[in-house]
Image (tube, rainbow, N blue to C red; front, side, top):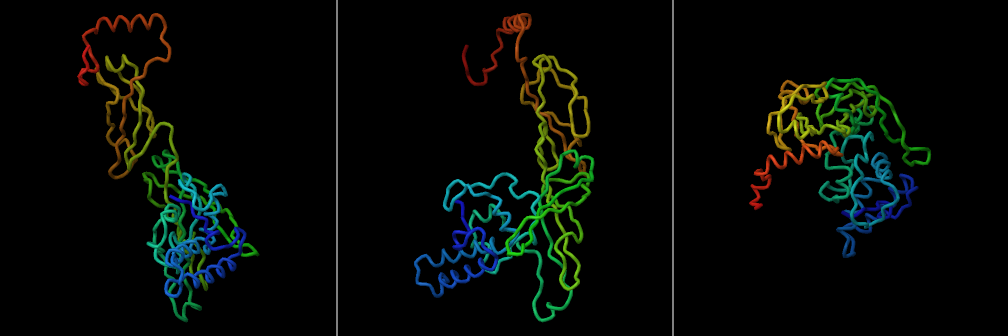
Length: 324
């Protein structure tokens, strides 16, 4: 996927004001409009201009786009958005503000940054819209929480970045802090709704809502799939051979689990109902991994050599058809 320099496409510097961006777009859109232009690439250029204007005319999208940095050049291949590049960044409406075309006109580059969600707010039209109270637009942001927050529920303070135009009509980042309640059992992709914490209303209308989409911080021990939680558990060779009772860490506390004798590395065990809490809680899966000591003493090495002699008839690769 190629990187797109929207400033270059519209022929404006990165420091351009919103009015300069609008004037440049209108000039170029007239030049490349497919109904009037004689240029061979008019339709493609017109779509490209619409995409660039969709981003740069919206202070929030523009500020987020600017965060990608100056290391990329137009047409540079291999672009991939940095992980979580727009986390904690508040977007109005959660979708397009465009009057420049349909979402299908936009490139994979655009969709990798801003997705395809349609705008969920209609302000209406007509003369009454100038005087009657209008509800503010909803806002959307993505936040990261810890897995333990979802197991137990929590109250957390979060900082969100949003934008406003400065005196020169250029977008600048501002930060606001909110205290939020994280409900027990919330899953990745679900949203927390904060009533009237979105954009202010017009003509005295109530503010919109703020929706916080949940992602989980990486955990050194656990991984998630829906409500199910997964852990790789190291065990000693003798625990695998003889069986054992071991303590297993879970986000809700330690659990004692029995390892059957003659257990192979990679065997999966399940603790039912120990995943994310819910009316139908997830399960907790343990994948066993046999781990050898990092250094063998002379006595330990002698024991392994004795085992090798005692189990001389055992061929661990017999299933591969390997002959001795």
